[in-house]
Amino acid sequence: MPPPRTYFSIESAVFWGKPVHLAIGIFDGVHLGHQTVIETAVHSARGTGGIAAVLTFRPHPSRLFRPDNPTRLLLDSATQAELFGRFGVDAVITHPFSREFAAIPAEEFMRWLLARQPRLAGVYVGQNWRFGAGRKGDVALLVESGRKEGVSVFSASPVQLDGEPVTSTRIRTLLEAGEIALANTLLGYAYFASGQTVPGRQLARQIGFPTLNLPWDPELRPRFGVYKVTVEGIPGVANYGVRPTIEREGGPILETHLLGSCPWVTGDALTVEWRQFIRPERKFGSVEELSAQIALDVAAAR
Image (cartoon, rainbow, N blue to C red; front, side, top):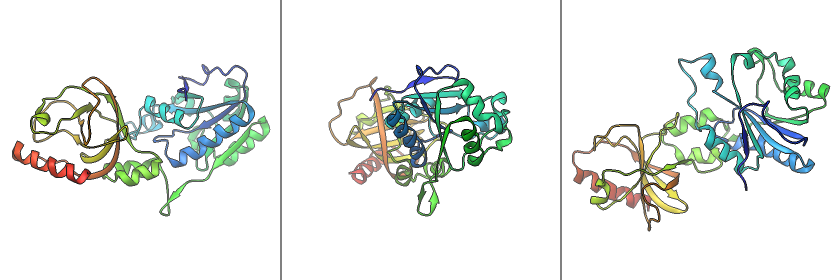
């Protein structure tokens, strides 16, 4: 499936006169609840020969309204767009979230959308989505505005798991606690880190556990520690953190030792999927202690 086209404002998005089915939200994590909204828009677009598009916003509104304590995002824009593409989205619009945008009265929001996308056929949101100045707009107002303007509005009920709604906040809490398996269930896919591998100090290779090293520092850092992972189906064990036993400069790094033959070398692009938390990162008294623990970690991952 081709990646979705990307636009950086709703005004710049061009859809060649086709009806536009627009899923709107922050969608951080693109979790199971988000997927319900997005897949409804995609299904409707396919049934009408239209465009399935996502309208999302950067920066996160918290950076405008509480800059001293902004929400730490699960995904950067590129990773989020990649996930939208997995679910059949044709186009991603990342509109600037500015004070001017935040000040649009809720009653005028639908007209604001139509002025920029006159072929707007449907709007798709979560049931609890709020919009407009002071977040006064709700789904009921959106439905009413859509009826007046001839735009269908669909809202998805929250997805529940273990009696609690699936939310980005809940997933952030799980990742910070190392609860990766449950986080993956809420996401609906395996949490992953992508990037280009870099050379290391070769210590892991010298002690018998060569690694692929991926510098990776998202806004929301998962718990530092050792995880069972897979790379394109090949199982492995990975340490995410700052390597306290071996002093190094810079941010955290993901070091992955594969439990099978490794077809990758330094400089290759890599996607590591996180499967299970094994233990927290810790400092060892010697390289020998570290080596012994890695052997135990490998056994646990197997």
